[in-house]
Image (cartoon, rainbow, N blue to C red; front, side):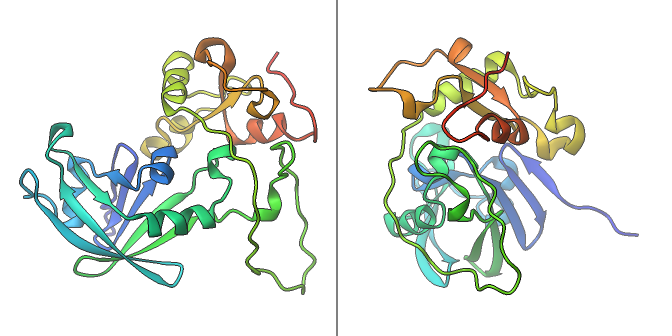
Length: 242
C-alpha cells in the first residue's frame, strides 16, 4: 500500500527524501536565501547543526553551478538558513524579472542529486511576454502551434518596491479568504494552501507620484490569483472591489 510521506512546515513542503519545495515570497528574491524550519532541516542534513556551524552546498540551476551555504546563524534564535550569493540571486531575478511587481511568486523545487548537491527548478515558469510593462496589467498571449518558443529576451523595466510587512499586516487584518469571490485555498488544498493569497493595492503603485505610506486596512485587499488577474484585465484601468 502506498503511503504519502509528504509533510509541510511554514512555506516548505518535503515531497519525499529527494524533493523539497519552497513556496517563495519576496524575501527569496531580495534576501539571498531562505530560512529552513526545524521540521524541514532533516532534508538538508542540518538537524544537528550547532550555533554558528555552516557547510557548503551546491545549487545547480539553469545550467549553472552556484556555491552556497547552509548554516545555523549566530543570531535570530539560532535560525538555520540556506544562503546563496548575488550570482544566484541575479540568476533567479533574470528568470523572473517582474516577480516583485506582479507578486506571482513561483514554487522553488530542490531536488537532491548527491550529498550537499541540489538541482533547483521553478514552477510555474513566467512567460515574459505575458506581462504588460506599461501599466502592470496582464494580457493573454496565444501561441501559434509550430512556431518556435523559448528565445531568451533581456529588457529593462521599472520595479516598484513593496514592503513585506504591509503584505503580512494586510493578511493579518483581512485573512486569507478572497475578498472578491470568497475562495479559500486551505479549504480546497489543505495544508498546501494554508495562508496562500495575493495582496492587491487598491491604488496601483504605478499611479503614485512618489513613495507613499500604505495603510493595509484600507489600501490593500486580499484576493485570489484569478480575481487579481481580472482586476488588472483591462489595460490602463483597474476595477474596484465594490
